[in-house]
Image (tube, rainbow, N blue to C red; front, side):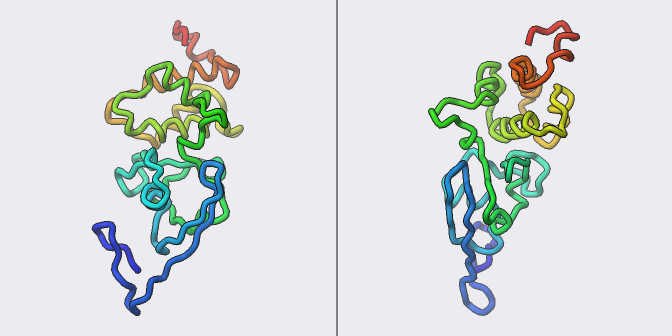
Length: 187
C-alpha cells in the first residue's frame, strides 16, 4: 500500500500490501509495529502508538514540533522513515518522566518557570534542551542551548521563559550560570 494525500492508503501497483515490521525501543519499552514502508516516525508514534506529544506542523523538518530523540540525538520525526529507527531508541517527551512518574528535571524546570503558553512546541523544546544538556560537545551554557533551540519555532514567543528554565537547570549543577548572573538575573 502507498500513502495517499488524505492519510489513507492506496494499493501498490501490483495490488499487494507491502508492509514492514519495525521494532524499536520507544520511551524505554520495546515496541514492534507493522507499517507501510513510507510511514514516518511521526505517523507511527501518533497513529499507531498513540503518542501525541510529537506534533506534525510543517512536514519539512524546519519547525521542530515533531522533535524526538533517536539514540539520544535530536531528530525530526516528520522526515525520518519508521524503518530507519528499527533497532534504535526513540524518546518522546513522555519518555523523559522518571520511573516514579515524576517529571524529569527539564520538564520540572519548564513547569516551574511557566515556560509554556499554548504548549504546542513545548514537548519538542523540552527534548531539545534535554539533549543539549546531555551533549558533551554542545558546551553547557545558555548560548549553546540557545543554539540547540534554533530549530524549534514558537509562535507564542515563550523563548525568554524557556531560557530562564535553562538557566535554572544550569544553576542546579548541570551547567554554568555566569551569563545569567552577569545580566543581573537571579535565575
